[in-house]
Length: 352
Image 1 (tube, one colour):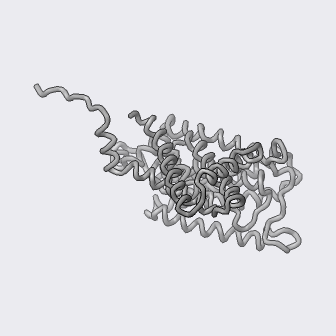
Image 2 (cartoon, rainbow, N blue to C red; image 1 turned 120 degrees about the vertical axis):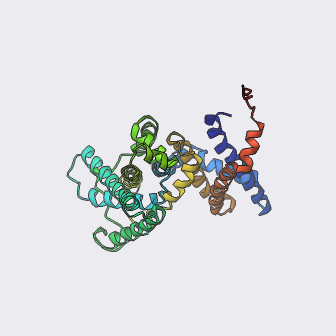
Image 3 (cartoon, rainbow, N blue to C red; image 1 turned 180 degrees about the vertical axis):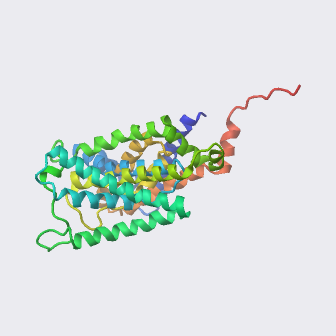
C-alpha cells in the first residue's frame, strides 16, 4: 500500500471503527444507534442553516488544526493552540474597539494582524524557551494556556469591560472592524475562505520550501540535521511563531466575524480539539480542512441528539477519543507487522 493511500485509508478506517464502537455503546445504553446517528447527521447537514453552522464550527478548528499540524510536523509538541487563540482574540478585541473611524478593509486587516502577532509572540516565546533553556514545550505551552485564560478574564472584568460595567464582556467591536455575513441569517463569512486558503499555503511551506524541509528533517532526525549544519534552534522558534500565529489568527477571526466581542469561556476548547483534528489529518495541512469539517459536524450534530434523543453531547467527545485511540492502534508494531505481512515482497538478488 502506498504512503498516500495509507494516509487516506487509516483515518477513514478509524472513523468507521469508532462509529461502530459508538453504535455498540449506544445500544448498550438503551438508545437506538441508527436513529441517534441519523439525528446527528441531520443536525450537521440536514438543511442549509445546519450546513452553515457546521462550517462555522469547523472554521476555528481549521486554524488551530493547521497550527498543531505545522508544529507537530517538526516534533514540536505545541499543546498551546488554545492559549494562542485566546491571546489572538484578546489582542484583536483590544485593537478593534478603537478602529471605529477606520475604513472597513484597514480595520479588518489591523484586527487580524493584531491577533496573528499576539499568537505568534506567544508561540515564539515557548520556542525560545525550548531553544535557550531546554524548557519542555509541552509544559510551557500548557502553562501559557492558563495564563491566556486568566488574561482574558482580567481584561473583560477590567480595561475591556463594556461601558455600563454590568457584565463581564467587552464592548462590541465597531462595524468597521466586523466581517460581513454572507446569506443572512447564516453567519458565513470570509474567515472560512481565509482558513481554507491557508491550508495549501501551509502545505506549500512544509513540502516545497527549504525551511519547511528543514523543519521536517529536524523533527525526524535531529542528529543528522545537526551533522549537516542545520540549526534546530532558529527553526524551532520560527515554526512555533508560525504555529501560534495561525491559532491567534483563528481567535481574531472568531471575534471580528462571529462574537464581535470578547468574554470569558470564549473558546469551548478549540485548541485542544485541534490536536485530534491534526492527528486525524495525519499532520497533512490539506487534510486538515476535511478533518475539521468532520469534527465540526460532530460538534453541531451533538446539540441535535441532545435535544431530540436525550443523548448527552459528551458522546461526541467519546467519539473523538475513540478515533484517536483507533488511529494509534493502527500504528502499533503488531498491526504494522500484520499489514506488512500481507504486502508482496520483492525478491532480493542472490549474492555473487
